[in-house]
Amino acid sequence: MARTLPKYTVPSLTPQEGAKIAEILQRRLDALNDLALTLKHVHWNVVGPHFIAVHEMLDPQVDAVRLMVDAIAERIATLGVAPVGTPGALVAARTWDDYSIGRDTAIAHLGALDEVYVGVITSHREAAAETEELDTVTNDLLVGHLHELELFHWFVRAHLESAGGALSTASADGEKAAADKARAKGKASA
Ligand SMILES: [Fe+2]
Image (spheres, rainbow, N blue to C red):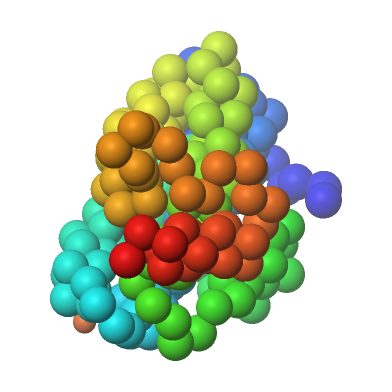
């Protein structure tokens, strides 16, 4: 997509560099807006044993991710570019599928969320690496998010982990497969 160059950007960056960083950040804005909505969807659709633990675990994650979204959008604006926060634009730009699980057990949603976090964190780390040389301030912002995102991922994974440290979702391909693996392991150990 052709970028429109900003009329100004932060001191010491060229408008081209500002536009490039803003484009990287726009993809992170889309990913984290999607994540915040997905976490709320799980908050509403989790059922069965451990309902309240998972239901209540997710709201602080939603709050934290929404703050990340706001910081990313404001960094884009600071760079002189207009952030795009509308749902239609998000869906048109995203490269991943909608979360596909509706009402289901805690363990199935946790298995699927493990995959969701793998995807978000992998692309957030790539974005952080891409900005490392170009803009340390944006890099610092993204690395700060990773501290929290990776902690939240561990909260999810701790439910899927055996006493020996293995994940029930290991080598799952996609969120449905991860949910199935987590569900099967949960039944076997019940
Ligand atoms: Fe709620």
